[in-house]
Length: 520
DNA sequence: AGTGCCGGGGG
DNA sequence: CCCCCGGCACT
Image: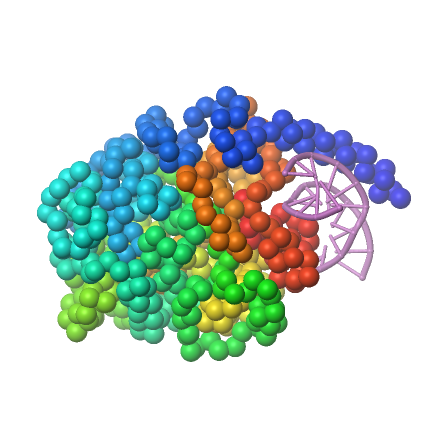
């Protein structure tokens, strides 16, 4: 009745918005695969439009290469060689357990991060500068591994500095095993992991293994906040059973099994991790990076990776862990923390990062050396009164890792709808993932989440040659009123699960709201 | 016709 | 809040 009347006004209002949208500043972003069609948008920031065109966007790195002297120092302390990577440079990265070559997308000094386009993987990752080395430099090639990549040997690899790096016979399978082992290990031993058990479990090895199953665009970048809808459960192949959390929501489990596409075991929506620089990338120069030992009652803080590794290895791991499988285990026992200036780090001992005591996200950021991190249930979520308390708290990683297609993240994601800010979650002592739920409309982050592709959830479709990421328009005239999300090309719950399994949809979808699970 | 999702509305 | 749904923009 009156709805009608109000409708009118609403309508006009809506139209207004829509028309704006209709104008579609982001035209190209939506579906037009080809980027050409787009309006005369400026080259726009970090839009890695396809790896194809040489990515030399020299122009604008958001607040990057400025004058991070401090950082340099910090790095120096780490005893690492510091290189200024230029966009377009060919480099090697230790990613997913092996070296991958790629092109430098940009080098953010402030973060000491380098965004690299992995050619083989067709994805972009963001890692610490230390983990990247110029491909051209034929320097001290440490191990004799990467026989295959013989082409360019790493001139420098952080890890190998003190400790013999694992590089074994680059074997995908072995890699998996290794990862699995690591995961398990950290799962059972790691001090911090206790609370968020699902953690490592999710961190399935399979996705870490470079060049493999993890969908093409499985990028993992720790770059600030990445829009994420978090979800998906473990890997298909490996089901890391974690004894601790036996019971899962019968409901979800049930559904999971019943669900037709459960077989996939995971629903990846890699995009979330896409590289979207957190708008406020700028960091105070006073950032200090330290590495904290996460061993139970240790909490030692060192300023260099090498140092911390040595510490962990020597004091906690001992030499026993020698089988190459564990060589890099130290990685799991320390965490990198970037602090503003706070000398209080040391005191942080008690509240280990992995603990639910989520640290005030902004201050601490951690990156995993070379492992792809998976999103984890934000520890915070629990606090923020979510409705499935039981579920979340006892969310069995195991359970979800195998069949529940959406159980775990599903749940989390659902709440995401409720607008979670953006937090970083510890995935494992040393692996953090930052997630930020796109509650972005408000913040006019010019460079906001960019989703590139739709996750091929139930169809093994091959990724197009180049990962395309649509950039988010930053139309100068700030048409950021783009309230209505441009129709995503990604699959949404409905498509994925079908109406029959509506109960598996994310709540947002169920409520006919913007899908939070497969956001685009 | 089918979808995605904004704006509203009911309980 | 949680959940549903009319309706409209898009596909």
